[in-house]
Length: 153
Image: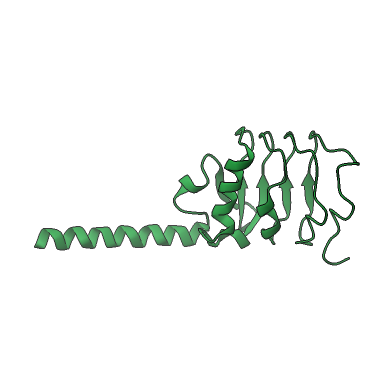
């Protein structure tokens, strides 16, 4: 009986430690929900998060599942994600979850296979300061009018 009690207390303390770590970092737990990407606190302000998925050769489906971990409440980090690095992957479109990342300031999505940007895709935020779409298959003909119109305009 004492052995079961001790095991239960140790498990409870471990659970508290894991929950405290989740709240401190804001990144989804377990890290497998966003693997192989790295989630860290932003260097200039610890209340904001950076998700780096660059150079992982990830496809649309895998990136979608990773971003779902932030958007669908597996972490409180969805509203804290300010930097998203998706360069050098195998994306064919801008992930739809990005429109739910309302604090996103920097989006690096260069060196993929993105061919178009939808109408009004970036209407969700006026906080986006940097959007790197370099070296994709996008032309001026495939960017829909109003794709980059902000909420404030």
